[in-house]
Image 1 (cartoon, rainbow, N blue to C red):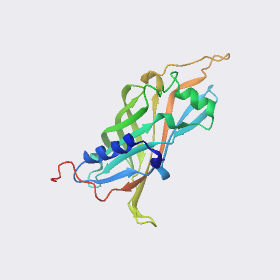
Image 2: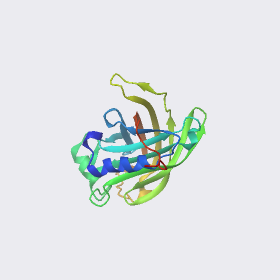
Image 3: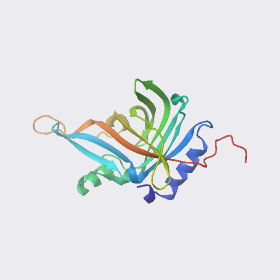
Image 4: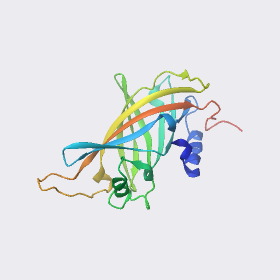
Length: 207
């Protein structure tokens, strides 16, 4: 959760907010009410799902022209959790994430397009030391509302996919039946609550 983030992750959020557009509303991800999840098919039979527990991010939403919105997310890959300690340790190893050398995964949007009632958010995904474009299909953002604690929030959900081998994670074993132990395609599944930052200053604001 966001309260467990490292000092460097919190600094990322501050720097990112400073670079957001001047005429948009700015938000940070509420880690206590958000989920950054993924799923991978195991042995061509079932989907193993997991999540990252530590992440931060900023979202700038231009409601007048949503295509001008900006998303930046920073994920601590060592926080991976698939509800199996042995599997999680394997995912952290050099066979997959190699967290010792590549502790962070980031997503920085490069374009936002309307697709009916949804948005297509394309951005640079940096993972395992490799940067590739990935497109997320986004539902939302919802309208703003004020929670019982006086915080203005709104929500969004997103899905996407990528090939792990495109990011240098080539570990694979073939089963006796001829299938693969771990599929190449990784499915992304995010549920996000965005907390409005009322005092965020635009990048060109004069001090």
